[in-house]
Image 1 (cartoon, one colour):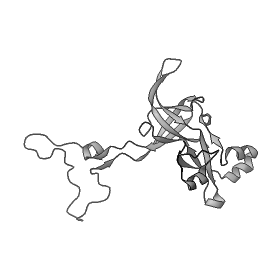
Image 2 (cartoon, rainbow, N blue to C red):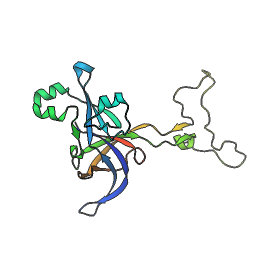
Image 3 (tube, helix red, strand yellow):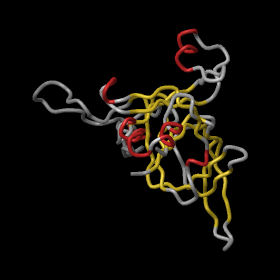
Image 4 (tube, rainbow, N blue to C red):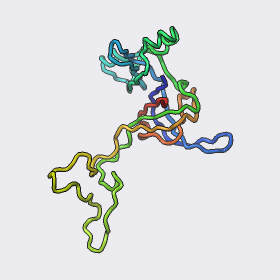
Length: 215
């Protein structure tokens, strides 16, 4: 199971031994802790719940559910597993029990340089935006008596007297769940719990992201 929760720190560039530059995003990842293990027999599907960070003032129900060594994670994400935990233990034995159990910790060594990954995060919120900014519409002429400068244009026909769902119009832009694929691990810093991922990933600085191994 290759998955970690992390915090986006920002972008920089790295040079390899040949002098080739790589644009990378630095992510502080982990250590993450497994706070819950779901099985097909009990929950209907197989998954692992990961916790990241530290909640200074957790509620009592949350502390009772997720507290490990007196520390309650602040951020949680659930990762589906292709294979049930019971099946993994049957094949791999005691080693699997230590890896996939409540309280087990995962760090940046889960990934290696060159691993293909996909990153999921919440994109930057842009507020209420018009159609030009939100959907790349073209504007009308600005002179010669035109009254159509940044207007959205027609949104429907005479029949059936209502606007169809999905019409591109002005509205809230950004703040969506976005997954960027086709990325790879460029550098692993185990001492500082940092991963350098090629290219850009969604979200603002200090945003929480999920890093998963590409299928």
